[in-house]
Amino acid sequence: MQYSRSAQVAIWAYVVVVLVLLYLPILPPIATSISPTGRQPSITSVSFKWYAQLASNPMLIESVKTSIKVALMVGLVTPLLALSAALAVRELKVPRLILMLMLLPLFIPGISLGLANAFLFQLADIAPSFWTILVVHVLWALPFAFLIVLTAISAFDPVYLESAYVHGANRLQAFITVELPNILPGILGSATFSVILSFNETVRTSLVQGPLNTVQTYIWSRYLQVGLSPQTYALMSLLILITLILIAGLLFFNLRKGKT
Amino acid sequence: MSQVRFARWLLFAAPILFICVFLLVPLALTFTISFWERSGFTIKPGLSLDAYKVFFSGVRLSVLRTSLGFAAVVTVLGLLTAYPIAYFLALRVSPRVSQTCLFLFAVPFVINPIIRNFSLAYILGRTGPVNSFLKEIGLIERPVDWLLFSDFSVILGLTLSYMPFMIYPLWLSLAGIDRRYAEASWVLGVPPVKTFLRVTLPLSLPGVFAASIFGFVGTFGESSVPIILGGLGYQLMGNTITSTLDVLNYPLAAAMSSIVAATMLLFLVLWYRMFDIQLFLGKITLRRF
Image (cartoon, rainbow over all chains, first blue to last red):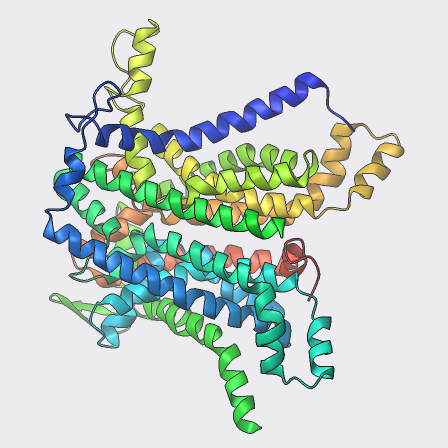
């Protein structure tokens, strides 16, 4: 069944309107951060002084370091757990159970997840640290990473593994030489996505960070204390741009994969 | 051989153990702590219903009701917005166009919702672009107050934050429907609207239910939107939990958090019993395991 031309136009217009509504909030922080006053967006005169001031804020620098360390570690740990879970779905006899467990963090509100872990660490006498932040970030990223890796693994036909076994490879050899190269793009995609999610997380982090700060919780605590300052707008703009660059990287990678 | 077997077992068990230790155990712990007693600034093990009594007798009960109501409204608004998009992308455009659009919907989702909502607060504010524009075209004389720090702004913020996420389960279930069912219905002379209502819509229910849970989960536990877009004193479950933590009433915070988590788990169990999650994910995983 084909739609009439006007119906087509109407539906596309609707999709575009929703997309515009979703993308619109990305612009004002950027336009504000480059304005000389730093309070209202400006398009006539441009200033980067608020960005320059960021570099001289020691508390912020610390939080940036924490954010980067956590994000890199999340990008390393999450895909490995996701890969292992995705393989378990295929190899173990309880796929439904594993699927449900891996997707569970999606269904628990951030505040409950953060608070629950805060209680766990408190009772286990584990002081808030880089590691406690890492745990909640991995929990948050794991369902997404898992779905990405699962998709990659499902597109791989296990008959190739059989062929490797016939030629004398053991399970590990067959996995590393035959399957891994095939699903590597999926694993790298899940790593990038995990980094993006970690870099944009606030609520879960704020409950287990103790004296530490990530960039996101730094912004949130500044907002609660003094409201939004020009420097905060600059910081938010940087975070948006970094996220967009990471997504562009992901997209570029996928397009190249699609061509070969 | 037994060592290899153990290593294999450990590899597969690692993610499951991770979820158990850092999600299931902590949630059970939260539930336990909700029955503990306060002593000064600390808590001690006990079997007290104080937290629940305080919760169900105070103003916080109305916060729960408001939160449930908001979560329902936002879920319905999200479904109404997302379903036509998911339907269109799943059944009416080429896979390439649909992939591109799904990707475009994912981008704003990964940018921290807190930053997006700060921005929304500016857009809706007294001196923001919406009010300026309305004044410019002469529709209003003074800035409209209810745009920000109101139920309107909170619901708008919640919907914009969580609606994109609802498109995916809807798309997944719609794209997985065998088109021959709908074609058979047309061949039998059933008009398109009726075909949709009696064939396509029922077949997409697993996705509708999953999307509803996603919308509900986000909205029900959201703690930053009521602060940013609701303004001073605006309370939903999420930020009431954080403000309870600020006054160190841990059992009460644990009780409220347990109520939120239990509601979500209840929905999840319902979904798990009613629909086949493997079949549901079968579309992206291309085949059943």
